[in-house]
Length: 180
Image (cartoon, one colour):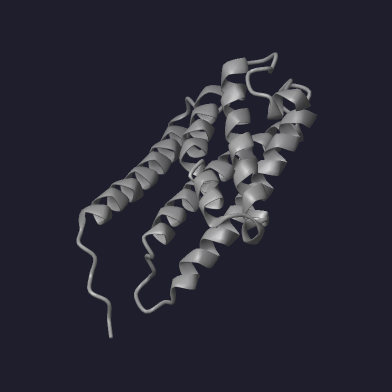
């Protein structure tokens, strides 16, 4: 086992955890949730900063996968799904998640220059990217079968499942009257 392999493992796990936080905070932000006594921009700022940190860890994960000779992930397989020589399906799911996240990042960088509706539609891709990233880790991750990693994966599933249920239930609630 090389340092590249450990870096790839660690950054993959941290990326999953951060993406889980990002999706959860994104759902919270979409409902205008904020901690009691805090302004709304706190939730938005934490979501944005966690997103940036997730992109950094994802970049390190991808680079370490390409550099590690044992991983055998070609640069093409990182961006073109299902072209990897090793585990093409599982690496392909990771490539799909990466491509979707790249679209989200790129449109967020030019958010003020594109129609809000387009940005929002692309941003909805996060709901597809997160489960693809989770499935990528389940299939390609070398720790996927370990008890501690299963706990991490279940915690991520529980967190996103909780906020999605909360979001759906929040849609059914009548909106509170505006404060005067």
